[in-house]
Length: 369
Image (cartoon, rainbow, N blue to C red):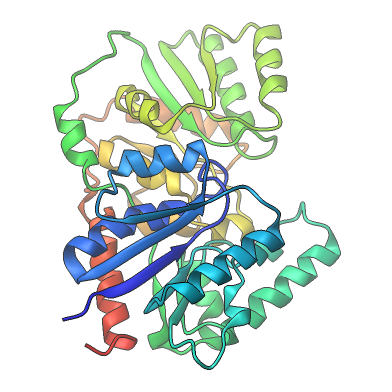
């Protein structure tokens, strides 16, 4: 039986473009379980190479392209695809740099898939004309591709009226399967008696991070034995550091900035509770916060918001609060401190599980074996 030649077409650096995690997460398992010959095409940069090394993708073909302008990158990808016949081309994000579908000809019999990971037209920071253009592309793309992968239930329902049900699959992000064994074998590093609160994300105002600063104030005011660790860069990082220092919060909240993924594991292992706040907006309903799946295998409480994907994962038993309600956040943190065991099971949220579902969907609807 001939192997299915599958190409994951990515763009940018994984540090800024989380959709690359889909390619690195699925590829190895598809080779193992589904008779695939998988290639990932990615930008030649430190972040992507470290990610692929971290995932141990020894059974996957890795093709790197140099940093170049968007048109040259697109031309490079079109040329590569023409020289190498693929059965399936998976576009991880429908941007101009990945718009190879628009140059498809009658001789190209590849199956083109596209992933919807956000609703870009809903992002309020975009200017009006840009949002309208993005909305046009979002609607038009449903007639361009053969198959569609929705990273969130919101996106699946949003696009469902315009796509045949068999041609679309709901496939959220996940965590690397080997994490479970790594966690079991990890020795306890932390000797601090403090209760450790962990946050990882982009440091931008009004994105939930402000709640952590207010939480730090309440921890000091109530003389609580708690510390907050914050990982991540962003345009407001330096301003946040200055504010923390000026208001004498440094003993409670520590800003680490961007931390390489291989070091993030240590911080997660030492955490007692994770915080992943989301706004009750279309933008956050539509996206699939990959960091939640990063937290899941550690089997520790995750405090988030009752919207979108978090609710799909945890249902009514989740630990939820609304951004801005710091008193409610503090009450939940105090409550989880008394939990003996977090009851959520991570087994159904690994990339191996997602690979099985993707393989079944693809072969049932597109690949004639």
